[in-house]
Length: 449
Image (cartoon, rainbow, N blue to C red):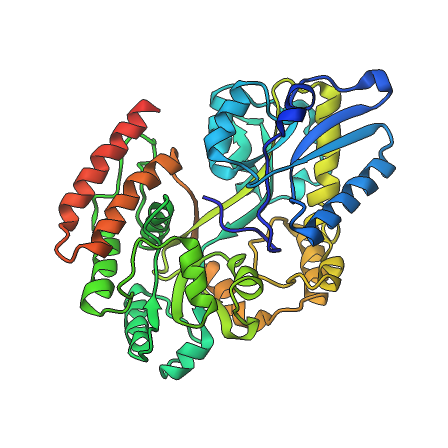
């Protein structure tokens, strides 16, 4: 799954318009007859996101000025990647020359032979060696490079400092175990007035996504190391569901309304009626700018459980029909737009601060070494959010195993949605049977590849 948008508040794009599809998407025609190499790219912010759209256009214009032999044609749509049309676009030759992907898609795109091999050209990407190896490895298959990571996220616990204080809890010490989450949620719910202690998703594949994150936090896995069998029918899997069941039915700390999705939970948190929920840092600006929250009241703790946390993110891959000139041009564009510390669309923190975009959220670090040091220095100098509210998250992440989503993630999440929703809507739900049934369905998904 994606989280909800990265440093800023937009979640953009990527479907070619029908008018452009025939001529501009993944054609392999580099436009060299005009004297320029032409590339189509996606994930341009939509016009409704005026600030981000302006930044993106500024950066593309600056790139073209520095590289007069390259013509960049950007496409916008919502969202950046639509799972319903993604495979069809690839198979139909409609994908852009440089296209956005979630981390979970990388292997799939390679397996269906729709990705260009970037290995012979990777030297064109100046920043490649500075990117975290575990993120580079996501786009590396059998020793060959097929994509470039752009951003990442890791899950933590967003909580309301004001409600913690009202409930007699220390807002500087968020819970770090699921036992503590349960105890704190019970105290927050006891405040009354419709206050909910802890909320969780259980629909639109989001319940399965959070089940996975919670299972990782307990030290479990959804799928075996060889990717062939489900591994949810375990003590760790039972612990996840039993905890949710007990908070929902024994403690009454999760409220009566269930089958929630991300927007429901964000509304609850933004209105000051929710104590805690699992999320990545990028939820915070959305809670403030769209849901009525306040930066000073919102804090982030580490993933409870102490064993692991789910990571995700995105990057760009290249159309298999791209010419060598297009691949080289696309790599240069990625360096300029996203991978130069302190500048570009995601790294120009000074520009973001002037536009009142949040700077200082604890995103996972993309870079290493000197590049990371520069990125952090510029970010710190321009921070405009209460960074002290996120220190527990940063400190706690050091001891957690960072784990990517399972293969066939969306299909598996769909199965697990039913498991989680049953526990949250049926007091007498049979946890053992639910795990057994879900395991069989996941095994079938994995068997189909």
